[in-house]
Length: 216
Image 1 (cartoon, rainbow, N blue to C red):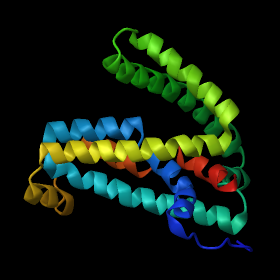
Image 2: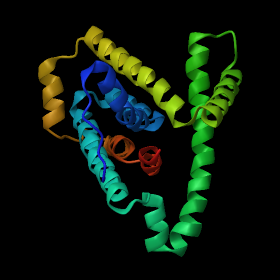
Image 3: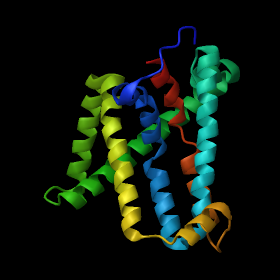
Image 4: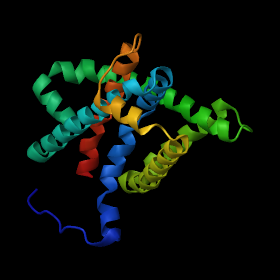
């Protein structure tokens, strides 16, 4: 970076600077890893808590590499793949990405529909899913990155406070929590869920979007 900006001063300036980080945090907490982590925790309890921590470490490493590539080359990771991998990235990976996008879009519509229906049962799950999809379409089409960042700031802070408050109300035992974080263990039958937690938290295709947010 040839012309770095001045360091932020005051809470107002700091709030503006942390926006991209909060957007990355929002994508880092995806539907898949939340479901996998909740399922693993409900089934096997504190002994598999270390998997989420390991996934977070992997996530940091991958995000750091993505950022360094962007700053060093001025290109995105996807552009680098196309340059270095050639035909594989241009055809096969992009075909997989298109299929993945359609499947995930449908899953997210269903997840949003289920959550909204639980809050407001007057509309069906399908109706809520369609409403969320339409709102998301116009939001991305008209809002650009600036609008997206503004909404994510509020959403991430709200989600963080809600999860923290829920954990506080449940009152998890401190000793078991610490033991589950620092002493890895694999209860019988937990391997698939643990791998899902590590992979879901640690790395997803949303990593490819980080470069474009940095560019904007």
